[in-house]
Length: 233
Image (cartoon, rainbow, N blue to C red):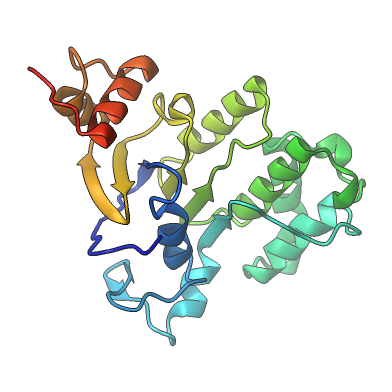
């Protein structure tokens, strides 16, 4: 789905990106990750427009977990993380420490010597999350990060994301329960266009019933918006 006339500003904290399948969420994340070049418009970071000359330093501070991540299955888990740390410019003397920290954060320390291809689906998803955060990025883009995670691991994911309040984090998801407790901002897209941009409280007051911001209340608000339901206040 093409993204059309979509303008947004992402502040530090967690922004949840919601929308139906094919709404343009993955396309938007790919453009923000600089893996897809937009036909029009531009991206700015820290007040500077991201051009070809500035794209390398931007990628150095960027962490990105795509919707269907892949990596070399023959590499041990710790080597995968070390490789991502190296690609993002982590100094040799610091690499071991950041790898250990990432392993602990995604609960894979006991699997550090296992080949990536021998991990379960949920373990591999956690490995790719570790690869996205190993260099402590200033911008973190996550496309459906909770796929394959059990409830305890999803709770751990929320803890990881809510603890890093000094970075810009954008999460595309269909699971409102994953973002309702931690999101500072909510953006809803549909058919490539932005339908809402604001706080969860504003969203619930505009489209929900009784302004409830728990998961059930936000689900009602989301369905009302997408379906175009009339909401009485």
